[in-house]
Image 1 (tube, helix red, strand yellow):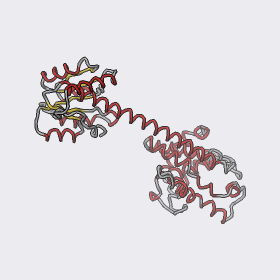
Image 2 (cartoon, rainbow, N blue to C red; image 1 turned 120 degrees about the vertical axis):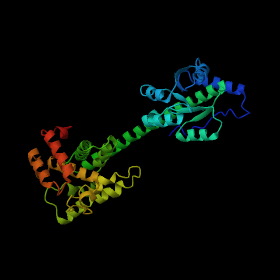
Image 3 (cartoon, rainbow, N blue to C red; image 1 turned 90 degrees about the horizontal axis):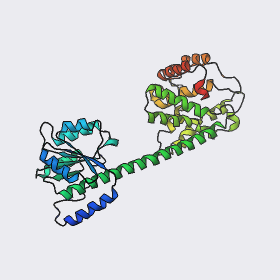
Image 4 (cartoon, rainbow, N blue to C red; image 1 turned 90 degrees about the vertical axis):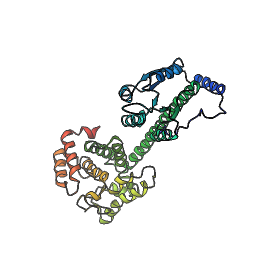
Length: 369
């Protein structure tokens, strides 16, 4: 957990730490933090609650006092405080059990830092609390300045953690957008080699993503297969244009050159270490479910799942695109070809999903989009 690594900044047992120095640190933090912070204090002892509330209130801190772990769990269901001060020794549910339950209901992105409070002298409780994910441990009775400083320091560190995570996420999204732009540009360059398949890679990527969505892929997995679909024909860079655009039937030698493009594509994409699965679609989208495809003659589930999806998406777009030797095939004809290839050329599951898409897209709306 991200807060487990936050070190304690002030130890009240350190005799060299003067009250004056602590007070100055508090004033420094007060200048840094102008926004009101929300702290929840959980303790079954009303006197301890009143003492802690008195120390923190009036310091730009809004305090909520609760008397049990169950009250806290109910409270965080609809509130997100900046910090929780949690007593360990409470009846029914002690602080340790409360923290365990709290972590079950809080996502990592919503994690609230917890400081344990305890009058116990043994170090075992402190060690156990930190191992459970508490960020600090404060002994009772409280030293007012120390309590306030630790609260402010913990909130500030938590805020910095969130700011850092947000910046990393922003940079990651920027890099993903840049990567997608580069991939789309490369896909357009590939499609430009074939005068009859302009936009083919983008359409295959779209169909593949739609099949994956209907099959239940996560958003991330859908975007991954979209990228694979965009680059499934990248190996055609290594095939002469005159062969790709030849209007007549290919010779055996020319067809062997065409059949080399999956391996060429794999060799290109496997060098991209940041996206190790990117080469999957390029390498195996011409494999057949019955094992009669190329380049490796894989069959059934030995063919990577993403490649099985891209294979049916690729075939669909090929049949619904104009060629030098034929026009676009009607949807009913395309449907019949996919039904015929079900279990032979195509994985039956993904063929069925493609047939569903055809039924929903009888006017080629998805293709035109």
